[in-house]
Amino acid sequence: MIINSANLDAIRVGFSTAFRRGLGQAQSQFGRIATTVPSTTKENKYGWLGKMPNMSEWIGPRAVHGLTEHDYAIRNKSFELTIGVDRDDIEDDNLGVYEPLFVEMGESVAAHPDQLVFNALKNGFTQPAYDGQNFFDADHPVLDENGEPTTVANTDGGAGTPWFLLSVNRSIRPIIYQLRKAPEFVAKDRPTDSNVFDQKQFLFGSDGRWNVGYGFWQMAWGSKQALSQTTYKLARESLMGMKGDHGRPLGIVPNLLVVPPSLEGQALELLNTERNAAGATNVYRNTAELLVSPWLA
Image (cartoon, rainbow, N blue to C red; front, side):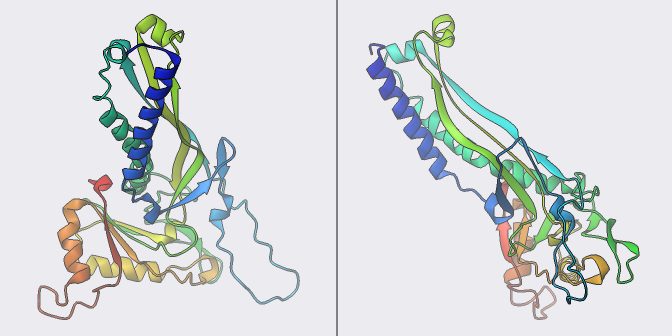
């Protein structure tokens, strides 16, 4: 193949098409547990996470709900993936071997939010939420009915394989995926580019800016105890019993059980069977959807 503008344009279009095909083939799961928030700056502040607004009787001046309860921010990060194509492969018309690589490149870029979001969920036992406590913690600070400080748990601890019960039917899901710049396909493929002139390598890549963080911890229960009717019951009752400051019920109803592949069998038995191991009616059948995520493996 002669290296000229027309042929290089055709190569770029072919690789870009393969990349986009890979983007479309990815089976993303992150949208089930994360809310996508657009970003226009280097970071977004989420002070409003410290205040769940609530209607109240209007007596005297309005009670204004502010946005500065907590100084919680998610800073965007830059990510890239680059593939080099040897000049000799272009001259020898040996490009067929690269097409699957660019499809895989697209799939990898599309799956990156899944990797970040589910890592955030898995690491929630050691990473802080907006209140400074770990996202899954036994000591989240709240105010009780009398306005006195107290603590609330959204985990029962343990040391085994983690599983999660989430409420994902509200406007904000437990994880926040913050998108500053969507991935795009770029190329350095002019014969005069330094990478080609000095190293005889044409470069094709994708880059973007995004990051993840935590939403309301009240909508998520994380456990490293064995998954059973007993631990599931505790998780479900704890989330439905969640209260905001001053004892206000939050009305949370968990509806998604998230497990790694190693717990799929236990989760299916818990949510799908008509009777439990003792032969009694399984009262928790169909009480939540099941999401088995390979990103938690």
